[in-house]
Image (tube, rainbow, N blue to C red; front, side):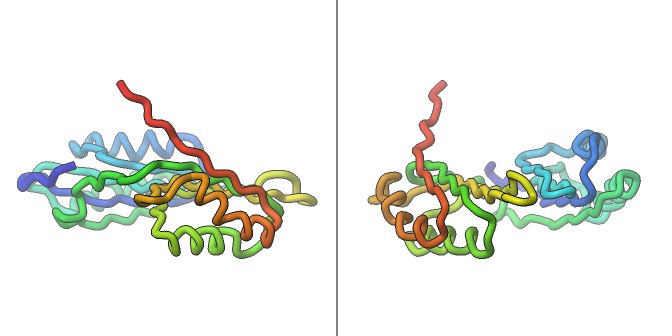
Length: 186
């Protein structure tokens, strides 16, 4: 995404109790305003649904108008709205450099899994591009699942990352796997 002087960009967040129709209602509201959804992520977290969208509109437009038009939509479906104006330097799409890998962590639910794994990655200058967690299993035997998409810096390999996480795997009594994501060429 290259900034254009006649285009405004906003980060829009919507959070609330999950139910069918949220994405449809919000995207319809944005469409009716003439917004382009440039980037988005939506997920269910427990019983809550969260969306973050990067939207663009042609000038003249204002943040207050965007809020004014979307707030009734959010209120109707029981969601909370947040809008932030993005500066031109915030809308330049950052290319992901380095080899892309998926790291999966599975184990008994316990505090500190996300912190300990991400601390190890940060110490090695490994950039996290996506992170998701879920609690699966039963109430008696909950299993914590952590999935990370990461970009490896030069000189780092998937095998090397897995070896560096081996001690942590033992300390936390979890399974940790690292695999390369092979891009598909068109």
